Every structure is written in structure tokens, then in C-alpha cells.
Amino acid sequence: MMPLSYEERSFVLEHGIFLVRNYEKMRDRQALLLREEVTERENENKEDGGSSQSQKGDLEDSSTKSGQHLTHSSTQSENRLGGEGDEEGRSVRSRNLTQTLQGIYDVIVSHKGSSGQSLAAPLLNLCSRKRSGSAPVDLSMLQRQLLSGHYESLDTFHSDMLKVFHCAEKYYGCESSVGRNVRQLREVYHSAHREALTQIGSFL
Image (cartoon, rainbow, N blue to C red; front, side, top):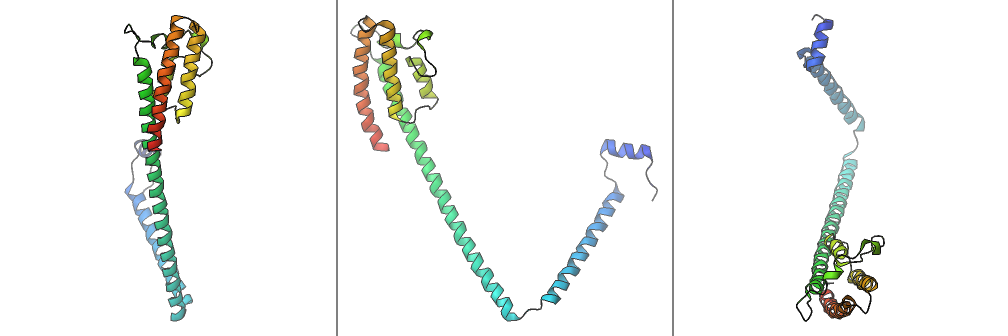
């Protein structure tokens, strides 16, 4: 078989061509390796020539190991299923908590005064200079954290809601009309908070 010229080798490399003669070389090499493996295995069988009692012991040992492996696999499977069940339970509790907190938020935002106006409207967006870090100082920031799944407990939400009320009183003044509305909203919130404690206790 004639060797390839420089131009032919370049063409083969450039176009990724698989040569038949390379395939034949690979096939012959694999056949040789297979014959050597078979010969080695036959020699090992001749050398081992152990007694049947020894083979029986190997079989029993193998059976014992197989049984142990199955038991271990079964235990792992049960643990995995148990873990998945726990994870699903946490997911359900998290959704229930988020729905409960959203319900409290909606009660506050939708609460209206005697003239039908929303008392929480001034608390939705407070002046940016009153913001401190990532702590929510108005209802809009609290709502964003609620939607992002930030709250993992009622206590954290409770603390942030009280901060919002405090920031509003500090910004508008406790004796202003907004300050008086905040006091009313705080009472509404505490009532909703007590109801939420009962709801959360039922699914924890």
C-alpha cells in the first residue's frame, strides 16, 4: 500500500476523512488484544485449579456480599425517599407561610379610613434618604422581599413590618394625619398577626 503524499495527508486532515486502511489496522489490533486476553484468562484458570470447597466458599461469600449490598441499597433508597418527603414538606410549609404573609400584607394595604381612602398609601414609597441598607422602610420594599421568598418565618416579617410603621412615623411625624393613620394600621396589623399565628401553628 503506497504511503500518502503530503498533499493527500493535508486533504485527509482538513476534511476529517477516516481511511479504510486505518480501520483495518485498528481492527487487527483489537483482535490481537482479544486473543491475548483469552490466553491470559485460560492460564489463570489452570493456575487457580482450587478445590471445589474453596469455590463453594467463594460463592457463599459472594452471596453474602450481594445480600449486604442489596440491604445497603434498600436503606439508601428509603433514606432518599425520606429526604424527598421532608423536602416536599418544607416546600409546602414555605408556600403556606408565603400565602399567610401575603394575606397580612393585603389586609394592611387594602384597609381604608372613614372617608374611604387607603391609609397605607403614604407608606408605599417613603423618601429614599430614609432608607438604610437592605432593611425595608416602606411597604413596596417589603412586598418585593415577600415575592422573592425572603421570609422564612413570621418573626422576620413581623420585625420588618414594625420597621415600616416606625419609619413612616419618623418621616411624617407621630402627630400628623399620616402618623395617626399608622397607629390605626398598627392595630389592624396586630390583629392580623394574631390570626396568622394560629394559621401557621396549624401547618408547622
